[in-house]
Image (cartoon, rainbow, N blue to C red):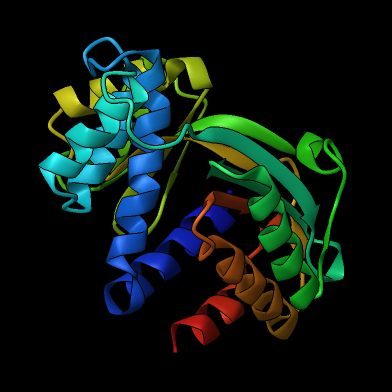
Length: 249
């Protein structure tokens, strides 16, 4: 699962320099709107609570957050309805790509995704063509400040987490989707500064490529992520340390 954390590291480092904050807020608003359909109270809507936390971490204005929640919950009739639609395809060298979108116009969205894939040397596939290569898991990450590795392992085991891994300065916890809320709360109660808590897609197997080919695929994934309607992009690309070093230059 190392590709997940490496890709996140790259985006964090680049994000401070070139993130488009307005676009980020638009995407967050769509996530809030969709989640709020299950109820506007984050105390009873775990999905909404996670996205509110994410919006706060990105310093999204409180008024924007509240407006999106009201719209999604049907308390504000202004604006169009957002749908969650997934697309599947392939990047260069046979890398599987799974794309989650939040859109009010599916024709526009699929057209933009097909164009990005084609320009990047990939292609759009049929529904189900690559989805079977991924598993849905809960993912939690936080810096190793309050707990050492042994304590993290112990608490993860007690709360039913599936797996634990460590980077130089952070812990990463993997859970069944249904266990994400319980495990997240346990580490919050242990006073860990949880930076990420989300449902994510993880490949069952990875594709390893040369650094040059890896960068080609990563550039395609970035171009897809920049589309307004795209929420998340997953792939089964294994990011080598060599490719990571080149990307960080």
